[in-house]
Amino acid sequence: METNLFENLCRYIGQTITVFTTSGGQSGSGFTGVLASVDNHTLKLITSIGASPSCPLGSNCSGGNYYNNYQECNNNQNYNCNYNFMGSVTEIPLCRIASFTHNAI
Image: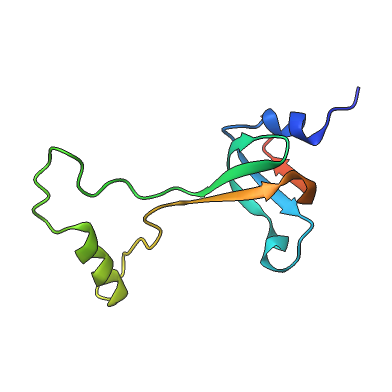
């Protein structure tokens, strides 16, 4: 019995996979991330996890704020900067997937 791409991908939701697409350029290296969801048309990969909140509710936050930390990074005053504050999600149309790879579990 042959299974389709959608069914195969659904087995790996929550796991890290690499997806190779039929497009050119940088995408030829593939997209690696945690498979967040799959529907009949697209898949969503969490390709970068955002930073944790620097000032959770209920804390004093007297050591500065988000804006000041971002400005320090832009002015090259802090070499341990995390520019990806929000994280990123990559959406890939299923019709553009050439292949995908996953760990054998």
